[in-house]
Amino acid sequence: MAVLQPEPQLQPATVSRRLPAPEEGGRLPGRAAWRRYAPAPQQVAVHVILGLGALVMVGPLLWMALTSFKTPADAEAFFETPRRLLAVLQNLWPDPFTLEAYEAVFTERPMLRYFLNSGIYTGLRMLPSLFFCSFAGFIFAKMRFPGRDLLFAAVIVTMMVPFQVKMLTLYEMMVDFGWVDTYWAVVVIGLMEPFGIFLFRQTILGIPDDLLDAARIDGCGPVRTYFSVVLPLVRPTLAAYSIFLFMWSWSDFLWPLIVLNSDLLKPIEVGILGFSDINNPEYVKMMAASTVAVAPILLFFLAMQRQFIRGVTMTGLKG
Image (cartoon, rainbow, N blue to C red; front, top):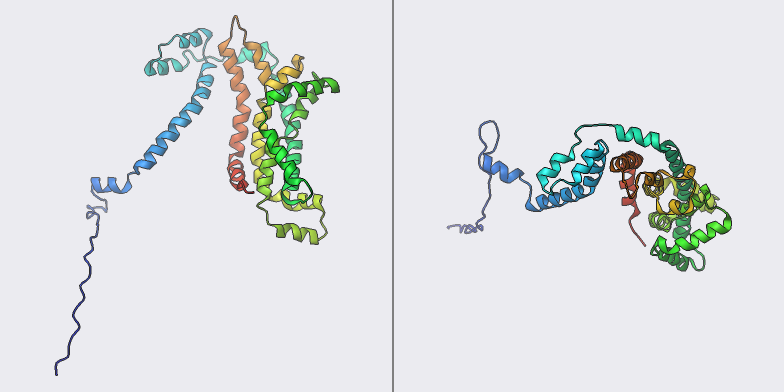
């Protein structure tokens, strides 16, 4: 008796893509290696766009720094250069390379005093603002009280009001307090920022309520919970916001220009204005002073950039 064997099932044909056989030494042929390791067109386009954006942002800083090492005649000749790329690049580099502008900046104006004033204003603004904004963010994020959401909405609305709209009212308040031409006129304005309150609130919203409940069970009040539980968890956001505060405070120009009259109280941004004569502008000295003024901001950002990226990432924009 014959045993019937099942008919073999036909498998669908599959097309396999294989790379060419490697050459001696384990390397793929040139064209195959290019196809395997070449970046995708989308990646190339993204990198080109990012490179152009970086050039637009870094270009003015580079031009400012290079101009500060030129002679006045060389700097004025740059403005007369034909606007062709090769001609601009040839005249961009200082020739001769000199430090005369930096010597003039520190001898003709009290730049060290301006530096000290900027440091005082920045320090007196940063530390209290970090505390006030983080504590207010904690209250809006985790405390419940009548009118909380309405009050937070009012804080958000103040972010949309330009500073120029509030400037006249703030100046009248400084006159009533007798703070015009004093340190307080510059410091008090920056002690509380709506953006800081919003930033910390969004970060603290991501903290589990179980941690706060455990602290409450252990007998911690709101202040103790803030210092012992919340503050250690928002350190990256503190670092990120400190960069914003440092940049805003150090580069503040309009408000100190309005409320300060004494040359010994001016910050460095206002002190640079002494080199900008309308009839005889000293471009090289202005560029040297601007390079000196922007250096602390760049150094502070480079020192805190890792915490800045982590803090902005942790914000999460919840709520």
